[in-house]
Length: 463
Image (cartoon, rainbow, N blue to C red; front, side, top):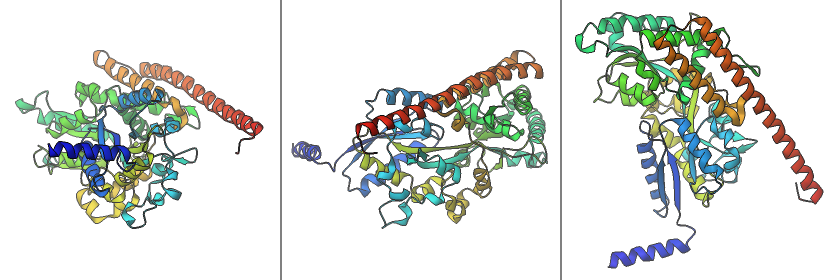
């Protein structure tokens, strides 16, 4: 009875007190993200004297499914979730629905001078990460971690068959094929062991795979505002993926997301895997079949002397403009994305957004491959979200559906270079149409804002 009465009193006090709020935050459950976020939130709640509560809303694994969910929620304009975890290309798309954080972080820095660790050191972010925090001059996001596509490989198998670490895609293919064929001589591994696994499901992850693949073949999706996905680099990159699917990859990759590929590699059934840095700590868990047997290289070039690659990824925290508790939401994401928290997340191989943490001895001890991941992040290739603007999700959908379709059809029949070129020509045409619409929308938006400025000035509003 006393406990019940106490609960009622606490509830009443919270009701009348602006200092007692419940925040809602979204989070993916890929890898260790959900576990780490819960731990960080518990620390923040304790830090605030246990005054506040935080509810976590778990997101789907596939980022394009998350995007569709956000679009549905935010367009309703009755959204009651305070904090949104967002993929890098979405920030500009949803910027109009997000809170300008400069209201809470003057000049991009925390007002709390007591703890340097929790300051938002804007200059310490990677340039590409820092640029993505802003939209129309407003800070609308804080990076939780950054990302770059990489290749994991089995060090024990390369040693067993006396194969060097490959430095080109062709060398990777040849090594993967050789080791796959040798390992399959074991009856238990026949048709169960593969040379290379990646993400070829029709989702955003395939767009990421293809952006870095075409980049490593010397091409681009967009070049000086011209769509060039059907150029030689795009055709050659696609043909290479077809060769992989037919010879060294499981057909299952056509439905693989990151976690599916990790499961295959982690169980000891593949030589090479394309994935994100987060997989490192999970692969090296003592309970796995590959613990202590994993190496990492950057996305290789197509030929000697070519450009290595790696698509820029990463997720950020934003505050919805519909939040009724912006002040507390801003304080929470400042804590979640602080250097001290990113150092903790790095123990599980989530790459920090702060450059200085790549020189941190503890961070490098847990993730030795971060030493050269730094260079990859400095030169990572971005998805063409800036070019397509708010139409990027549509462009990405066209890309991953087209590439998945080509790869799927290649299983049943021989697809020639000529056929691939024709299909990429069609994709190029669709992307050009989306590009033109994006440009038209941008011009219209500027005209609307200009007209609004004139009307406000005419009516005497302060500008």
